[in-house]
Length: 356
Image (cartoon, rainbow, N blue to C red; front, side):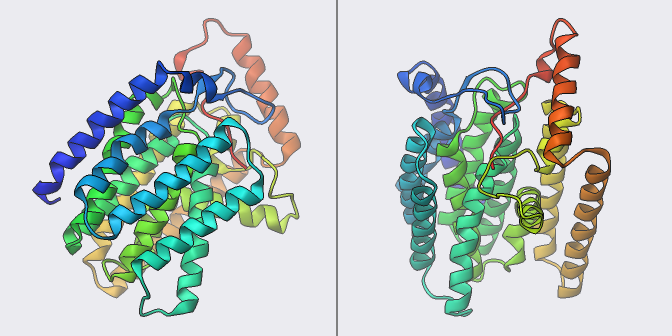
């Protein structure tokens, strides 16, 4: 990456670390507490202030030092974060949340301007950005999961943007990655705090906005940001499609995501995080490597990932239950086994609340 960007990344890390430490000691931490409920994978209340720390470290750096559209994306994300913080404190109506996501996505598409793909593709981009904002939130349900995706996914975008000659977007993406690394110091299993909607939703928005920016500006093909964030995109999208096909109420919380089923099947949150990080790193590295390859090799790499995800999903489907009744039984068995063992190990402590 461009050496001129490095000081901004260091600053984002330091500010995020300091912000999280300060927030943990503030009244905000007491206000934004994740209380376990019947849908949660964790048992202990923990503050949901990690996402605010990430944004406090990354967004000011982007506004102060980045140029071009990156500043505007950061500003839009800040507004989304404020709305999401209110949702963390007192759940907002679904219509208000989705309306905010769609408006933010529309502004992101307007900021980058018309692309050669036309209006139809712009509409697809708006829906795609709004979906990524939501799926990032859905996937923020285990220690280290969303934090690791933020570090690796945005680092991938930052490297690609720097190579393509867009230092503003490279700085924004890199600052998000560096700030999330500071968050992981508190969120690595067992986590002492969670990201919260105020972090996951704007981070998802920024993943989609930066991804579309690169497509519209010709920095990378449309498959690149999808592959970079594919561990989240695949899990959340396949889960949604399957629930729609089964005529399940998709607006209700559930435990049908692959990562949730692994935890309910007995995986510790640390094991899940390390396995997911390995997949994330492989996806990011292959996405960057594929950019310099021919069309045929790019297609082969993408096909390999389709087969890999298909195999992973098939294995989880066979070994771990998906139906709510089976999940409930699995969770009760897991809780019973843990309660019968003393002392409870740190690695067994569950992570953040599951999302719909």
